[in-house]
Image (cartoon, rainbow, N blue to C red; front, top):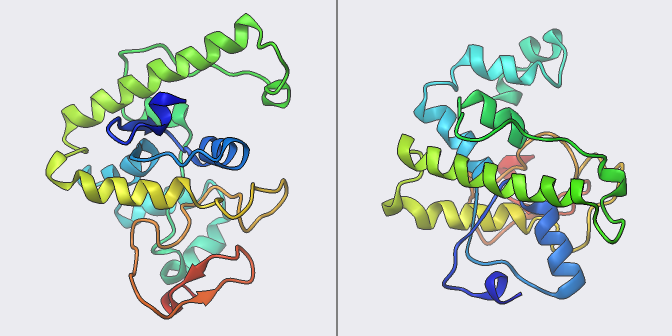
Length: 205
């Protein structure tokens, strides 16, 4: 665990919530510093001009009906749909690695890991490195602003630091970026959400 616990080594992840939860609740390891590329992908939508009304609604239609999206434009304005690692790789046209592989995650905890699963894990590392390189070259990761990206990433991956996620809990496991990860509001007075149990500003309700 020396690399994971070394504060001078930046850990690059893609949707690191499950990774953080497993390490934190099992081994009491608090990953830091971290950069989550899933957040960089969301921020890149603004840089690419891909966060206009049409693009935003197109993403929402992956999860909601056309009627819901059209009738609730204001409510959905700050709702960001998360994208899988494979989908992100494809959308950004990152061709420096082969497409994302797939395995049966139901048997992921079986030990010892088969060669298929070891290759899958190694390929994920390759993909994340390729995506990280692509994001730097595209200017989506700019080091003068890296500290902001790191603080957002830490808020994001540690969102389940109170307890591991429960299967079927729609408030804590869903395809949307949780509120106040990117648009964080540092205030003293917060309200505890009865659904996700997070302490949020009143503007999130």
